[in-house]
Image (cartoon, rainbow, N blue to C red; front, side, top):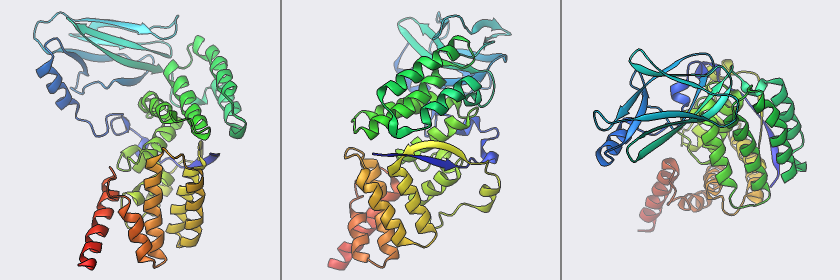
Length: 371
């Protein structure tokens, strides 16, 4: 499977102050999760901000700004222990009690574990601090990333080993947190393994998403990677994929079943200059197919879908579902009702509501026609 350079626009009006919408907790109910844990684990303990927002498992903050938080034990009066453990030696976050609550701060970029325990229960929060927005723009890191992404067809395992070694100096100087560097490496390594047809490529992409999504409010590159990943796993309703990215957002809305996938003029006006991201050639073709359909060219769309299907990994059933949905839409525009029904029926067991609804509607229509 080949790789491609993809150009995307970020919607500035969405990204500004979008911490809570971008966060990894999409589709989760942290309060409900805590109540369930509290009811079943006597020694459970969790952390939350002073305004009552439960902390996620992965968090990112800016250096130099104290982060106040509360420790909440399931049992009143429980003895609680909390400590910080850095990933890279030489940089640490400071933990202290202040004004009736706890406070965490760091002077340098760092990633580490904030571990809170009570009795036999222990919970780890992965916390990173960044010195400023756009960590990928740090000159030393940007140079190494540009070298890695300059020629994806020439990638080998040694390419990623060199990238890891070259970014060690950045980490040792405490200019970037370890999780950001590792997440970027894991993302590109996952694409490389997909290209090599290695079956566990999805695990690397999932890990990259988990590491990078809390950086999204601070990093355009993290926003691109995570929005693209949500599209890849067919999470088309996730705000980060649907609203923050212009081209991928249009495609996500298309796969959600919206009849007008075109990007709103206001989104285009608020978009930043194009950013570049390495993606799979499969998804480049699928996105091009949707854009061709949007422009009224179903024959060109069909040609792009054929390209996508030719390079798809057999185990990538989520991409297969996108291809089936696309072929259904192409058949409709080509006035091929029989073909449209055939592709729609293949989506009857899909986990995507819009895909499943389409299959159900076609099945009902087919049953009515037969009877």
